Figure 1: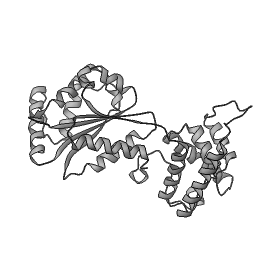
Figure 2 (figure 1 turned 90 degrees about the vertical axis):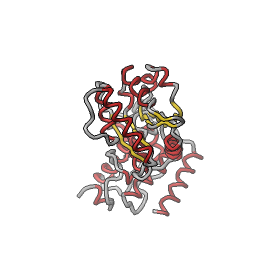
Figure 3 (figure 1 turned 90 degrees about the horizontal axis):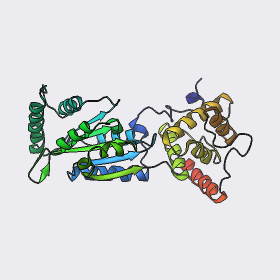
Figure 4 (figure 1 turned 135 degrees about the horizontal axis):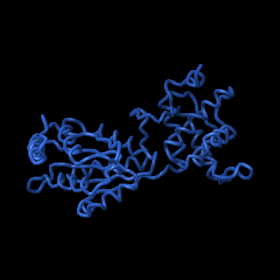
Length: 301
């Protein structure tokens, strides 16, 4: 028996694998998506989303791609997997993703092909959008200059291509490699770690998607998970997954504070020496509010 069977769950609630079913529409993610879609729909050219590791940038990029429906947009999502990307590769890949057939090996010919394709997209009443995930990998001036050149593809009064960068804070350094490009950023939004209340809602949301029949985390466990994970969604997933497995191994019907402390120690997430106070004292009013909220959430599950 797995912990999924033990807790009567339909699927893993806290996997870090991308899964659109688990998209969590937090206030900041909703605000980010609204701003990025505004940038695209207004043909602003370049928009940027910055966030720390594990804050949901890739999830948001995939959500945005899903919102770019084929009837209104010609779109693609490119993930930069290493820093050795060349201008030739990025230009060819963008052209292919936007529908250029048989991209030319000569750069000038390829740019003409891409321009013609962008005109076709514009005449069809759609917008061309390229999403770049892990954009902090674009670590050369040549790449930044290439994107500036792509954003220069326009007709009078209208840009033909919109680009959205998703990346870590180091992406700011990449943009500064080409100051004219940095000055063209029309919309920028920063994702931050979850607050304790948002983390509680996030945990509940993931459990609900997995068809949990009740709240599996004790009220005092939730702020501890947030604390040890630093509010980072990816670490919250890892903590919760390990906590549920540990509760299953101990034949507990829920995760309590003792299990959270144990899992945090196993994962090396303790912030204080284990011999002293191993976690900060929770403010009673905050804990009461979180407990009350969890009670209300459980009643809806």
